[in-house]
Image (tube, rainbow, N blue to C red):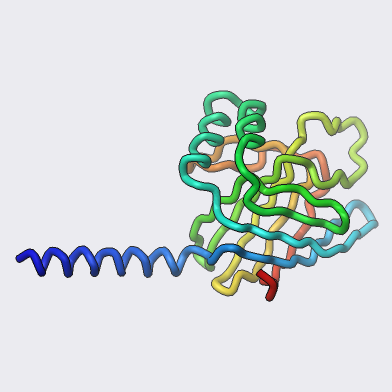
Length: 187
């Protein structure tokens, strides 16, 4: 009987591990993305480098999402800045530290949300729109099993609570940048 229980526990661990391996990516993860922003008749293209050493721990994720849910954007921002850097986003000579990374499975692979604690850029010419209050860089990626895919980057954004205890974009002060992502060979 004891052998049967041990075998059942081992089988359960193998099944849960294999289930996670299908949905989750491997970290550290290095990505290169073609970045393109269009504003009016102008189009700007560049290359973005994204490095994610690990996902945000469940405790840290809960800490910042609770700060957002119960204390608003400013409390989220303060809690986020206290988290350790877990990667970076670089666009040409500008670079900012990723403090939040959450991965969720979707129908084609996975959705990866990255948040850096500083704005990476301001694009666009929206007269009257203040840059104040848009202190985050937010990236949302949809990746396949080979870590290739598409997404968008908001160089100056605000967030709000998502229904699934996550974070979603509330507003942004800059033109969104469309990303076409390729996994980098460098780790």
